[in-house]
Image (tube, rainbow, N blue to C red; front, side):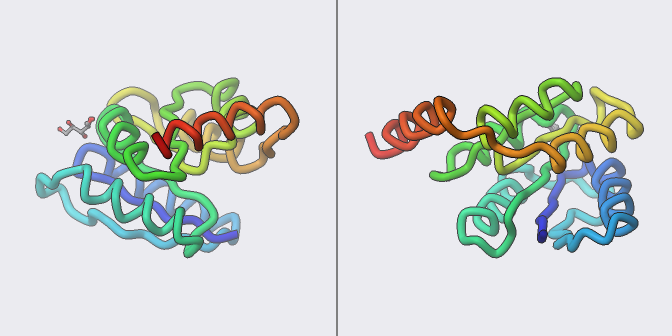
Length: 146
Ligand code: RB5
């Protein structure tokens, strides 16, 4: 499984911790930055990660910023992206099982590193339940076409 991760300055420390965590689990990670504390614009990183996911270069993506919210708003502008801001493990599992989310957004200023890593693990281990949830995703695809 290959995953692309990106962040702005507000999520850089959390992004680095997640990259280290995923490397320890032998998961292939493409880290598109940012790599410093210099202020950057989160939509550029959201766009790059989202494009890698919809193009199939990576199966899944993770985006970190101060809240996770700006990243999710930007990433969800790309057709085919289902980006979810998550701050608890119940939602982490549900958003894979029900929404088949393909990008996980996390807020470094909202949750601690320990919880964030547990959310990442929970999200990666969960699988899409299909069935009635697929019907609902099909309706989201119809919305994208309107
Ligand atoms: C950057 O200061 C901050 O606005 C950004 O990281 C994010 O929280 C936006 O949603």
